[in-house]
Image (cartoon, rainbow, N blue to C red; front, side):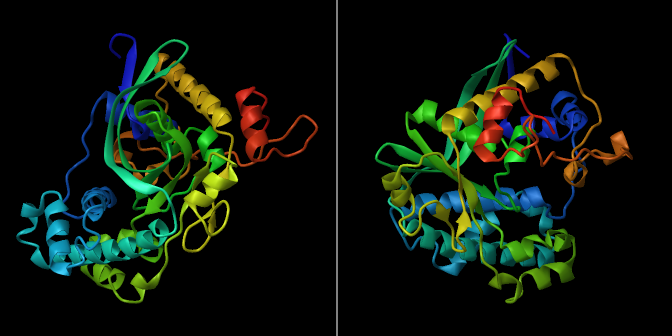
Length: 351
């Protein structure tokens, strides 16, 4: 902490809520994970993010940019981190590039369908935000971020975040501090670009059928099976938030059906933006208090250890926490959606 500021990113603070000790090792002690020559999920994600950012930006002036597969392949190869280290594993590297090229082609087809049915136009790509401040009771949190994509229409904005894993907005994860990204990015856009927030959602970069077998990327046979025609025949789902009930705006966002976005018609939940902002300020205030108190317990949520780089350090053998999925009023009635947010803001939640 410097000058009353705690610096970080949304993903870093989500890591704290997932497991305080993992956050301490990564962000406090800065313990580095061992390097590997195998492509991991974050390596795949970084490459696909770079590829989609480049393609999306060029498509504004040239809709056929990278339709040529050879040019797309060259872009993918250039986006692969440490590609020079794979000179002795050329077959493996070639299969990974094949995998990424196929995934990019499928994602582009899906996004063209979505973008063709909306008045919101892609305007900002890899938009950088620095020193976004959230005032907490005892300290200020300072955020830096790159927002994958911002679509704009008549002063309104929709934030879109690329994901290589399966991700959706879950209200119970949100109030547990595990799903803060979409709302925090929306607040950043509102402040830095002076755009009014309409909504935000995740754009999957990975075919979900392939994603379910992501662990196979460490083997050659796994890569061959994942790039097969059958594996690439799945469809993409879209998940996120609508922050307005204005019929005109929602139809401008998606003319087909109100509150529905995505090839398969995934439901986009509607919430009151002001209440969500109050909730996220409360969550970050709790985070700041715990950081100042030095709470770094080994207390992961379920699933956190799966992607942690430090199992040999903490050697956690206990039972991971579960996300609370049911909250009730004092009269025993279960709280849903907006009522749950309102009760959370008032400190009235009872599990």
